[in-house]
Image 1 (tube, rainbow, N blue to C red):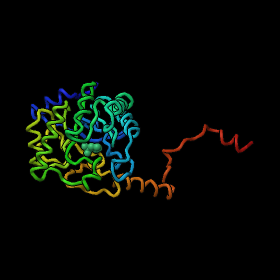
Image 2 (tube, rainbow, N blue to C red):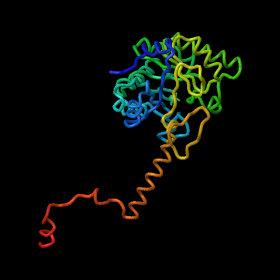
Image 3 (cartoon, protein in one colour):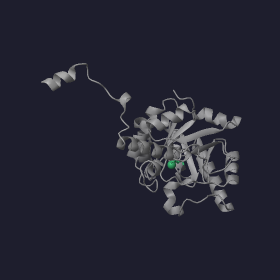
Image 4 (tube, rainbow, N blue to C red):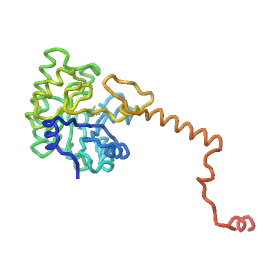
Length: 279
Ligand code: KIV
Ligand code: NA
């Protein structure tokens, strides 16, 4: 049973209680996030970048998402899990889109799905909601459209862009989304969207006015080599350095015959070796 659901999330917004979300991609990351007290786990298609080594989220497939979601669900049995619908899996027929969503929930074990886009995806959001699926929207910088946007740039700088973001946010709320991720949106515009909507906004690089925050697991922990610092991220650990140093010490101990030591080895019963050498 999950500690959180979309009804409680809306109440958190009304009460002014911030919502914490982090990505996770496998059993240990999900389990550690749950034990640390996170509100929501996102199985983000950012796994394409941080786990699979692609340079964008575009190569990530529905099979990848199902596989990782299933591992996360095994690790975090009491946490609300949102899974990303990957590139171009929700732009064909509604029927095809719903089939993908069904896989993330039935095979993956997600409790909700996230889809990138504004008013143009309202029909598929509405269809999913009508089928009983909690849908999280995602506007601002939408990485699946990076080749159209022309890079990872800040959204909502000018009035026209701000107006478009607000219109998209309202269209998603109207279509039944339970919340919206705002990625790389100027603080003023994100705060306005948060104020105008009754559903929670969860920001990443979107300032202090959002109802919640989301960060990528590998960013929080600097779990990469090399780790490239991002302005909107606060790091809380340096796992990359810890891992490299630890493996380096292991290598040195093997080369120096320091490992294995006495406490790591197993002995045969008394007399056994005499028997073998004597035979
Ligand atoms: O894939 C992801 O990690 C995301 C978050 C950045 C919101 O979509
Ligand atoms: Na994503």
